[in-house]
Image (cartoon, rainbow, N blue to C red; front, top):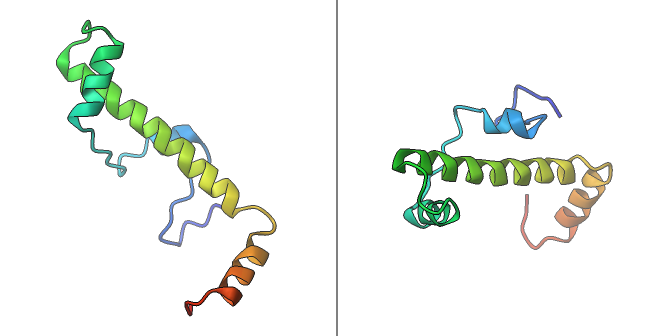
Length: 91
């Protein structure tokens, strides 16, 4: 799935996803506090936010690749057709 003309960007690897400058992941205070607790307060404040964002991007990248894998299964078209056929919503 490497269609570059569509609106969806298909990443080949987690690293490619993590390094995409267009992805903006907000980090809240709870996530920063969790990092502070895990590091036992030995990490500078500005670095805490970087670590929290990095952890969140890592999870995000794994989820995206998992979704891509599910979408690219050979039976996706069959499943999508069945869902569309039995769905009460019109597509």
